[in-house]
Image (cartoon, one colour):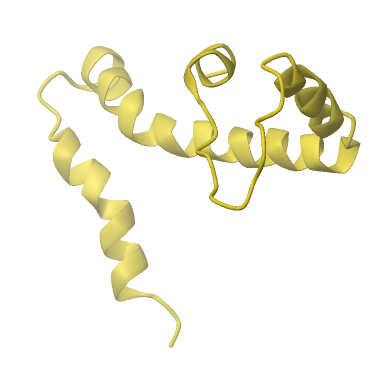
Length: 91
């Protein structure tokens, strides 16, 4: 994504806008965003949360199958979390 977005994304033209900034301008804009430490910290925390969250669905079934029990029903293990969240949610 770090390489793909700057290389492939083009901002759509707006009717009331003049000329688009130079293609090298995205680099300066990107450095402006990275200069905001609080925003970068937010991105790191938020990204880290989702990486850990998705490991439950990507790595856990492989780990259970390879190291715990090859005949384990990993589908039932994975649906336990959503079922508990749905049934025990606060109103």
